[in-house]
Image (cartoon, rainbow, N blue to C red):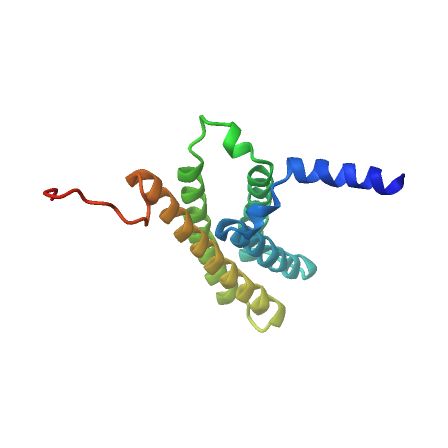
Length: 163
């Protein structure tokens, strides 16, 4: 009896959550962004921080929360139901903006790390997170460009006589 109830619960979870999204490039990037961003702000928050680290904490925690929300929205399929939001353009703008903010935060973190190995490690994680957001921005750009031109990277069939 417990097995049947557990199977019903698992099927409900699978019905509402698209775990296949985690296998896409955007899904993989979101998971990596969450893990690396979490490492960044945990390292900083464990140590006493001030001044520059406040900006780094703001960037890392805010982007972590928004990325977590985005992962939830995409896994639940809300992006397919809410048509009035330009999801691809929003994703491209978000990933590009966060890449720039994380790059600034990483540079500041390393520049003001001093002799603290923990702050240097946080800076390294911030750089890794910057790279992952940059890769996500690239994938967002490719997806946006593909839908904008109507074919993406697919081969275009030319009719005879067409230029």
